[in-house]
Amino acid sequence: NKATSHCHDIKGKETEDHGSKHLPQEIVKLISQAQEAKKQAYCSYSNFRVGAALLTQDNHVFTGCNVENAFYNLCVCAERNAMAKAVSEGYKEFKAIAIARNLLVCMDKATMMDFFCLASFHSQFELKWQVYMSKPNGSYQNKTVDELLPVSFGPEDLSMVKIHTFPPTF
Image 1 (cartoon, one colour):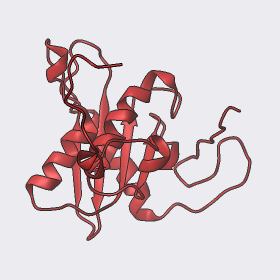
Image 2 (tube, one colour):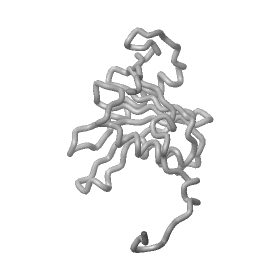
Image 3 (cartoon, rainbow, N blue to C red):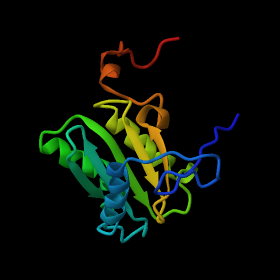
Image 4 (cartoon, rainbow, N blue to C red):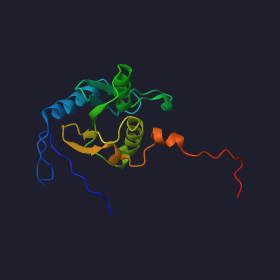
């Protein structure tokens, strides 16, 4: 069974005409801020721009963009950049994040690794907040963090029983 998902335009209308819903003005603004943050991306290697705008529970917004490095392991994604800025300013409770990419699809297999990072990083705080993934035209797809990666690695996983036997005995 392949899960189906629908993208919505910036006013909340599903782009596949399966109905509509009203998108709160703060989320419309958040998606727009993510699109703006994308312009600041440092992506001289991939040319893949990503911007993020993170909304705290008390309505502060922190933006971030991806920052690439020739040593790819040192790259920082836009979502983690925005999250780190918020945490460094004392914010740890969030409502939503908008992510803007220069892709024509809201979500596909090519971007799933980014969502693994997002879900695992963001699950350190909460799993039920909203993620709005948007296209260049502002249309979006909405999921919760736990829907993006239901088996993310979080603080509760640190208490799991660890086996320190090496080599493994059978």
